[in-house]
View 1 (cartoon, one colour):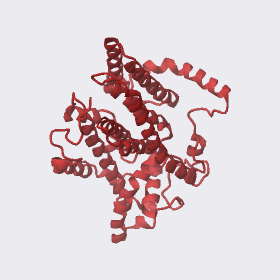
View 2 (cartoon, helix red, strand yellow):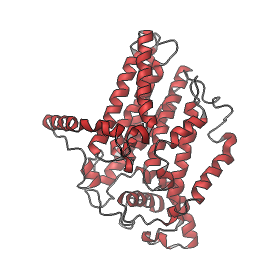
View 3 (cartoon, helix red, strand yellow):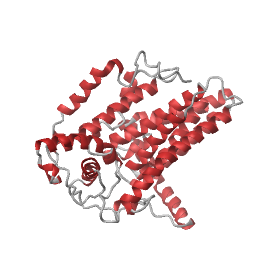
View 4 (cartoon, one colour):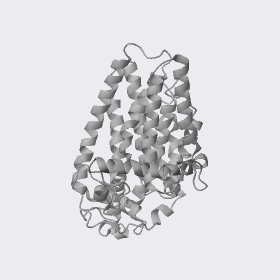
Length: 399
């Protein structure tokens, strides 16, 4: 199923390898042709302003005191001292914002003392720079993932997959949002899972790569609370890879799966604990609810007992007739706005069920069940969101 990633990709010796100048060219082309990214005033755009406030506080001041940050719209967290949104994108952009703020300090630019003067500053540039870097790293990691299998996907196909996911708009046009960061964390979790499987097959320690998968998951949750279901992504991937083994499951299959799941669980816990601690420092709750993060806004009703669970299920079935709209709607229907999601989903399902029918094995059926559960969980988020893909709401179907 898998090939050693260190030798995969036709001579790509490292994440940059022989393509260093190519990647640098793309990076600076993105940056230099989008100078509006330096000038956009995001103080009245709540999401953009919130993420920038987190990035500047963590990167320039290295603290969680947001009293001197830009005005981030009307939304505050329930504690009324933190911006009303998740901090993950700001946390990931903070090192870049902090690095470029050194130029502002050296030049005496006013943004150092007055955050409202962020426009045209190097600190502001640092956020856009981070967005482009994470997107390009995602593409490069996707190349490595595509080269990991016997039937290798070409880099051109993988690149087409990446840019057709809808994320490119949030790299080139609205880079202060969290989408490019999510794209990276999802890719990182996938890459870590594939590498962990490869190392385990080679009877080498897979702990490091299982931890990388856990890091990708933890950062995804830090970016958006609704990314919590990404915890299941490595589990789905392991079942899918295992079910595609040419020789079928062996007598040691159960031990391998248990070992990999155990390593992955350890990696998740190791990185989710710091996220919980940071949540408590920012929102006064290690596992914050939506109202605690966003103030009064909430998409999913609070669950305090069995009655609330039943009410939530009833609401899901009430919204279920809108599922065809998500796939075939005239405005941002997935079938034409992101066909890779549609064909990828049904293609993976058909392949797994076909493998089960041909080989009379249960593993593809189990893998198919995990894919269905994973997709339904994210489909539920989209249903409750009640938002069109103009805000890229359907990105939750992407992982």
